[in-house]
Image (cartoon, rainbow, N blue to C red; front, top):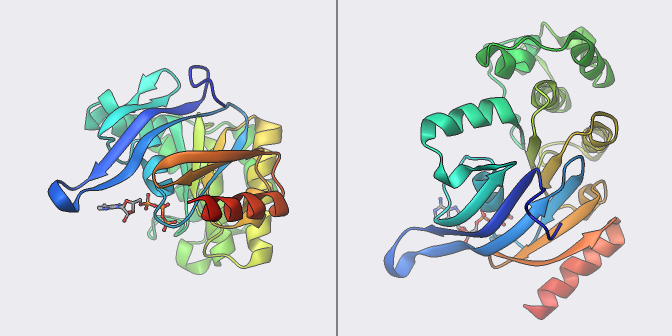
Length: 247
Ligand SMILES: Nc1ncnc2c1ncn2[C@@H]1O[C@H](COP(=O)(O)OP(=O)(O)OP(=O)(O)O)[C@@H](O)[C@H]1O
């Protein structure tokens, strides 16, 4: 999406510099990109191209050096930490490679935690739907240590989706999963876009994972270096290869 004004999430001339002086790293070098509502977008690019930095700035986990990191109409670069905490809790869903569940809570408690913290009640219909589709019905009283990796990631997905966030940011969500379980997680993310109108932005290294998305945004050296609409494994692999050749 080239027009960033209507996007669920957008970067506008976003710059992120880590450190100062001769050792400073310009991780984002003027990124402008929009992520459309109710669409599934994958961010890809070589190691060190700025994928995680972009996602962290867009999700209010890290502060950009200059430019705008928009969530709907809110510029996250201008918000104090107190507001960012509330934005992350109430308007964004997160799925991380390492699951990031709270070990002392049950699956059910982990799933409803963001809503509990926000003082909101889960929509019972959506709760039953998400738990049912993810096959978690008989695991709700288990703690994370009693669940497989795939089950833990499904709990994290349920937690991310139940609050109906404006955007779900997923950072290598299948990185710790075997290919079959990873495919289930990706299919669920895909169906959340189709059936719930969820907006999903995912960082991945895997062309097969990116093929579940509606669009791939390519980064190289902290800049947008292209994109692929309606990607499949072959078109993504080819785009990554030509990126490597032209750099
Ligand atoms: N906290 C930090 N302090 C200093 N430099 C950092 C920090 N985080 C990232 N960088 C640097 O910023 C650049 C972009 O890093 P980033 O993690 O965003 O890339 P990436 O595309 O997600 O990489 P990968 O695919 O390897 O995870 C890299 O050169 C990295 O070394």
